[in-house]
Image (cartoon, rainbow, N blue to C red; front, side):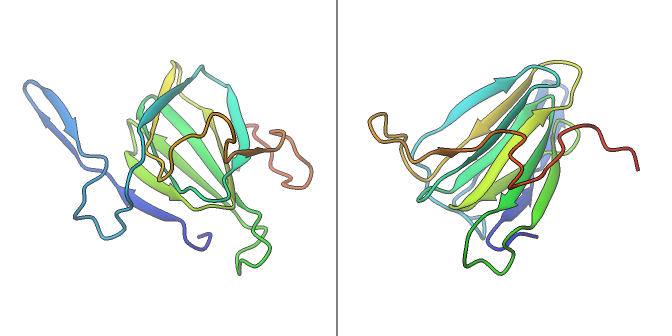
Length: 151
């Protein structure tokens, strides 16, 4: 696991009316304050990658469909520099992922329909000076292949 990345399995509570899922609670061991909440969607097969932040930690989960979340540790002084983590997150595997500053991340919708990702970052988005640094999805420095891997 990449240093400082935290995952938290989310509990789905179903009853005859529907389902409830708690995403973040202040009594969780690794709780971090939330500056805002937003959602983003992906169409099937679409990759949204890569980006990282200098200051904010992202706290994300997929609430509809499924996504393959991939992290790449690009931090110079990290003991896990160069490592990659993959997580399959969504309806079939509800999980919160805390992605620390300096770690590249992205995801690909792997469900048959549109996926919905909710993020609860620790910093407000600054429209005038965004804390967002991007790389192409196929950046050779990262060297990740987003195609389906048959093992």
